[in-house]
Length: 191
Image (cartoon, rainbow, N blue to C red; front, side, top):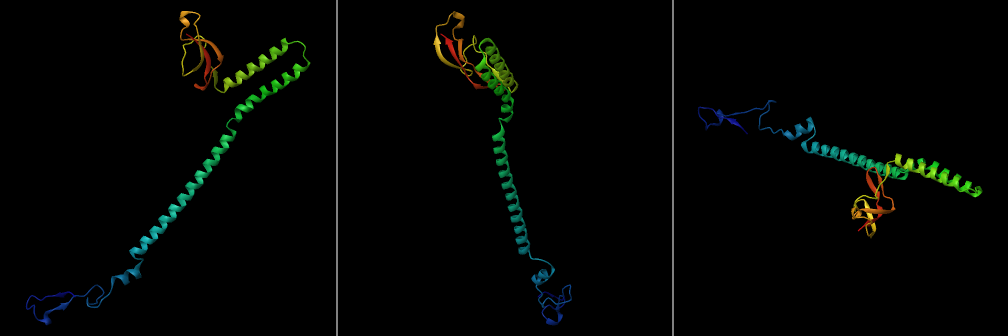
């Protein structure tokens, strides 16, 4: 309880007056601030609990959204993998049809020359399709042996001195797909 002291005689109780609060009540009459806060709004603890539940709800929604995103992308990747070679296969179907026609024609043909020409045309068509898709043959014969591009099968004595360390013959062609080696050329190197 707060009391004002009179400047005159501070020891006498008559000179003391009680200080009153805004409501006109004396400080001696206890009015708790907790009850007024409870009447005015939620306490700090209740506010924190509400914020915590909102944060948990937000976290669960975000986690569920991310989980759905992850599942969706996995499914999309699987779908893409199943059909990733579709365009190449569609482009090669006419070549397959040409080979079937050539095989049927070989049964009744007596002259070999037209068959050879037909097979050469089919090979040319196949090479053009693969070139359009980014496939490129590597030229190896006469070039310096490069282990990043070639796979040496054997060494033979070089026919001339300038062919030492160079590719003399090619057993299997090498191929690049969009400037990346997809099959090394199998070569014979001059020693």
